[in-house]
Length: 188
Image (cartoon, rainbow, N blue to C red):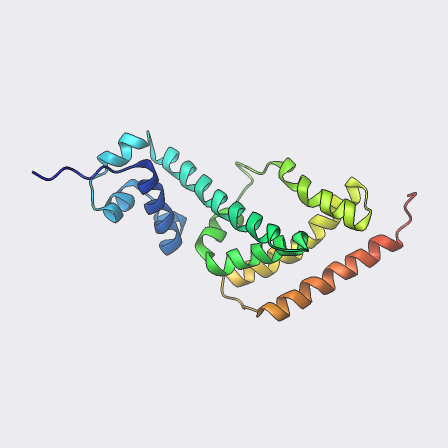
């Protein structure tokens, strides 16, 4: 008699991520994961106490995937701040459903952002541009608005600029902000 296949937590999470990638977060459920794995829901409930726990773990996996991609892009670049923005847009292009789940959802009821995650980016801006912490945060938020807008348009197939156009638009906006912050009175 052949040994039963052992369904691991990692296999379940991978199947759940694949479901979100293919059909969006609304398609994620224990039956969908079981169907994807070719098993009953029992192995899923042996690893996760509830659908909420499965969704939270899958969401954490998606965040980890995004973070790994961004960290790798930053490590491989001599301009890590720029690389992070381009990696965000690239994630929207390659993983539109995961991008929507992570970055285009209603966060008013359960914000999950950790403000300390911004600190490495703020440190880059403080060092490279000589900004105070408050100015670096404002610079970051303004730049983030542009990057997020472009990524959203890419994820929703509104448009998909090539790398040269993306680079030019982001550089133009960055240099414009840099110029504005350099002209402001540092004693304000």
